[in-house]
Length: 367
Ligand code: COI
Image 1: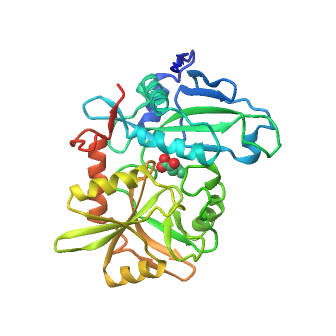
Image 2: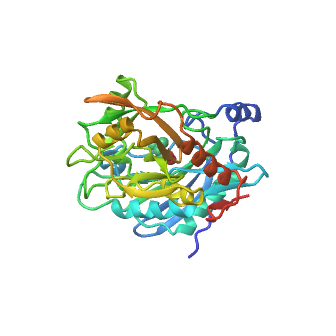
Image 3: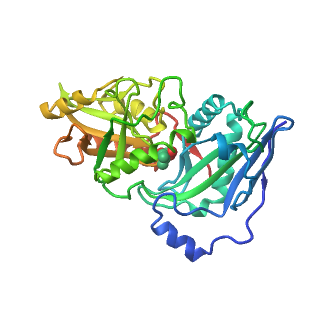
């Protein structure tokens, strides 16, 4: 039976002036809109009770599975207010498919992709006044699913789940304007993911252990952690919330960008995938390969490697200017923002804000 969402508008929306103040300087993940979408699943009823309802705290029994065994996963997506006034989402089906891949890995139920997209369309339509305008601004969407069964028995996965989607006005992680290059810390002692684990899906359990490494990075004056492979601690994988790209000096007038291949231990990001498609249209060759820490340092020294950038939905495209590690520090290029990074960032943004043609049909109009 098709799932239809009941819309229950809030009686107490945030006052206009307060909302405008948030939209003028949204930051990232600090403010939330008036509504959320919810949908429940049980083994007996399947998906049911679909709603867009007032944003409110969830009430859960302290013995709920999610609190003890971390059966939680999520997506990060954005809705944009385009220059022409339309409100759009970026590749929502891509996220719907990854949400289901994660669900499969965590033994949670599959959600029809159409329902995932419909839920977000309804939430964004309801919250259209919360979508900020202006370069770099968006409404960040965070759909997530939690196991809601009560009980500590660690035998079979939960027999009930809550899917919830919340929305938060956002400027780029790290602020708008020309991005400040990141200084990154190579985590040579902690590991993010190992083969056969959950590193290639968007499970919350990948994020909690990253806080200690992030603390270590901040203590050394760095912004973010770069994770290496679990077996040798040599091969560069990703940055926890972002994928990495390495930009090589032009040969015969063409640059080449390389990103670590999807070996099963790093998260396939939608921005990573989009750049792999977009770059060739801009005359840039792309490669999925691998790079060791020693190679990264040596190729920066030789001038072969000229830029490095990170990418993700929250971060978009953001340069990496300097690397610190237990075995030494080095700069990428002159430590500033490179032209290839800026071109890719701008080209992606031009599609998202409706200023450039959308050759891959990535834009999904909401209202
Ligand atoms: C996103 O980019 O949407 C993410 O999920 C990263 C998050 C850790 C901020």
